[in-house]
Image (cartoon, rainbow, N blue to C red):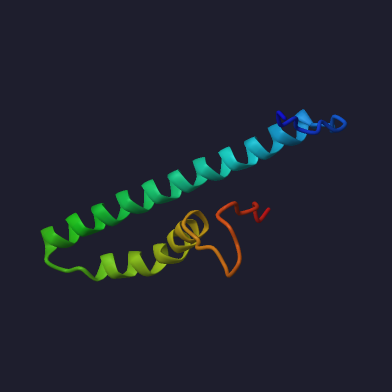
Amino acid sequence: MKYRPKVGKEFPVSDVKERTQYLTEYTRTVIAIAVVGAAILALLGAAAIGAYHGDFGALGTLWSAISLPLGLVVGYYFRGAGQGDNENHKSSA
């Protein structure tokens, strides 16, 4: 006896919804890359200036300002799974 899958009714797939979700995730990714890139460039610049002048006070101040947005971006993309949760996270938007 050969296995035959049950085939049900077709369900509607909204192309607009998929495009909107793709655009939302793409926009978030671009913003995240821009934030991380700008933060790294700013930190490297402040470290270079600090090394040249021998004073790293500006680097510490810059890090205290950048750490929150950078932590939010990294936390969004690398969040862990909760108890009983699988790796397929729904978007928080």
